[in-house]
Structure formats: C-alpha cells, structure tokens
Amino acid sequence: MKSEKTRKLVLIAVLSALSAVLMVFRFPLPFMPPFLSFDFAGIPELIGAFTLGPIAGIFIIVVRIILQLALAGTNSMFTGELQSLMLSIALVLPASLVYQRNNTKQGAVKAMVIGTFMNVIVAVFTNLVIIIPFYISLYGMDMGMIIEMSRAVNPYVDSTLKLVLLGIVPFNLIKNAIVCLITFVIYKKISPIIKRYTK
Image (cartoon, rainbow, N blue to C red; front, side, top):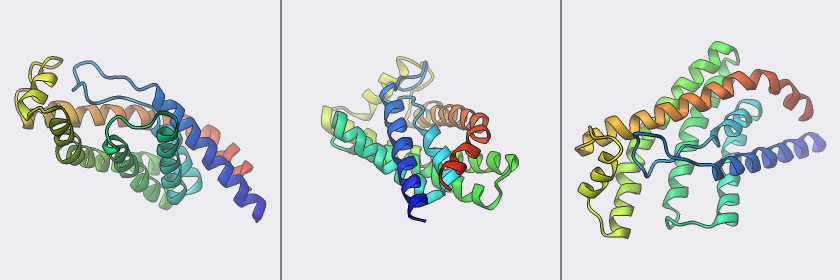
C-alpha cells in the first residue's frame, strides 16, 4: 500500500515536471492575439488525471505552476499563473470526472469535449476580468490599444466582442483540440504501463 502511494507520488512529480518543461516552449499562434500563447502542458496533466484521478490531475497542475515560479519567477505579478491554474483545472477536472464514469474511447471523447467547453468559458472570463485589465493597469493601456494589438495580426478584430469571438474563443478551441487529440492518441498506449507502475 505504501509502495503504491509512493509510486503515485513519484508519477505525479514526473508528470508535473514534464508539464513544466512543456510550458517553457510556449509560442503564439498566427492571427491570434499576441498575449495568448500556445503550449502542450495539458497533455501530461490530462494523462495523469485520466490515469490517477481528478485530484491527482489538480496536484499535477499545482506542482507544475510551483515549478514554473521556482525556476522562472513571474513577470505578471502572478496573474498569468492564476489564469493558467484556472484554465488547466477547467479542462482537466471536468474531463477526468466524466472519464471516470465511462473510461472508453467514446467516454474519453465526451470528457475532452466537455473539458474544452468549460475551458473556453473560463478563458473568456479570465481574459476579460483578470488578464486584460491587469495589463491595462500595469502598462497604462486602454481596451482600444489591446484591440489594436490584436487587429495587427487579425484585421477583423475591431471590438471587444470580436476579440472574444475571433481571438480568445478560437485560440482556446484550437489549443484544446490539439492537446486533446494528442492525449487521445497516446493515452491508451501508455496508460497500461502507468497503471502497472502504480500497482
């Protein structure tokens, strides 16, 4: 029993470290607002949550953020890390809860669709309520300047509504679709190995 618990903790640590490493390789997407960055950190987080359960998934996210802060600090007065925490949990928690009830391929697809939907809702909220107001305050900007920054890469973004509909929503749909697709492809192949290791 103790050995099983220790192995699960080791696996959580390994997946957290992998997630933190993947966060290092963030990059913007073409035609998307420049303050949004793409990463693959959600893959080990989803794999951990599907294999070990929702609580383990949340632990992986929290440890990943702690590792990020320890290694690189923060350049956003922790607002970026707070948003990352909320967005990651919004994807991983509902997805893993749904998958727990139906751990089939169809269940995994349904879980990821629901997780993506929740993630997009939280992304819109956190960007409009936390991230954008923070940058406006920190850099003495206004909403018009944020829209102009986004319009520079996508000329159709000319209002806050279009920033949401043509920037934040599609970015998070694309990001989560790619992360979930990769997770779906590799999960069934590696989950038996992980489950054998933790028993």
